[in-house]
Amino acid sequence: MFLTPLNPRWPDWHGKRVWLIGASSGIGAAVARDLLQRGARVALSARREDALVAVAANSALARILPMDVTDPAAWKSAHKHLIREWGGLDLTVFCAAQYEQLRSWELQSDSVRGTIEVNLASVYYGLEVILPDLIAQGNGSIALVASVAGYLGLPNATVYGPTKAALINLAELLYAELHPKGLGVYLVNPGFVKTKMTASNKFPMPAMISVDEASRDILRGMEKGVFEIHFPKRFTRLLKLMSLLPYRLRLAALAQMVGR
Ligand SMILES: NC(=O)c1ccc[n+]([C@@H]2O[C@H](COP(=O)([O-])OP(=O)(O)OC[C@H]3O[C@@H](n4cnc5c(N)ncnc54)[C@H](OP(=O)(O)O)[C@@H]3O)[C@@H](O)[C@H]2O)c1
Image (cartoon, rainbow, N blue to C red):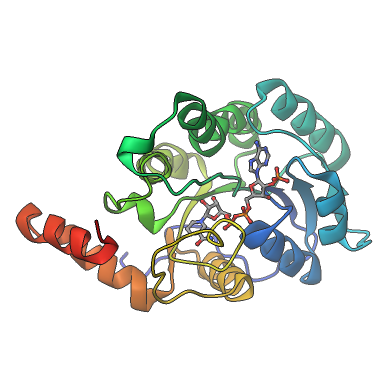
């Protein structure tokens, strides 16, 4: 029982129908490129159509579906379009997010609302349209891209961190509800990855990896049927260990790590 993978394995991506949300840059773009290379059919969504077209690089397997994830109507029409064209979905990857390095005394309601909408509420809008069909299909998977910022209360991630903690919680409950219905639920927790999201960080980012390494780890984790795909392990294991410490030690370590 302990050796059985928690999720479906993906030995062959050829012909698989993948909807990648947040595919215009960074990790999402790298995963989209790798999946196209492996023969999957990939629908690329994000707001910037020109960037999606560049990622697709004229692949006949790619579909460009620009949308703003904060618009529930956009989810409905994009999903309808895909189901009409493909007849169903094998995997939806929720990778869109926004991040602002922000201390708790710098909060502004517009930015708080925007981050919660993109990082968290949009996942619910997507699940609302995707799940009824997946459950009827009796197979198919979803992957939520959260973050190690969801493991612990990391200073600077004042709004971003709690949205990612919520996604980790959501992935666990989705697994409990959907696995018995034959669906896969993957939780992806990256450490620091070199993208435009991390470009403006003014603090040290240990064990930073490239988007190509991140994509390789994500696909390798899915190919093995892992529930939580976290990387790079030399960093994520340390944070996991920290999250087990009693608060006196854990809070001291956090303050030490991120500075005042
Ligand atoms: N980089 C890291 O160190 C790191 C670490 C842990 C977790 N992550 C997670 O990994 C995922 C990818 O991040 P990344 O670093 O690759 O960042 P990125 O390069 O900034 O990519 C973010 C993606 O989200 C899309 N997006 C943002 N707002 C959107 C909206 N309203 N509607 C539709 N799409 C929207 C962006 O596309 P448009 O701008 O074209 O809309 C873009 O494709 C995120 O979930 C992030 O939280 C990243």
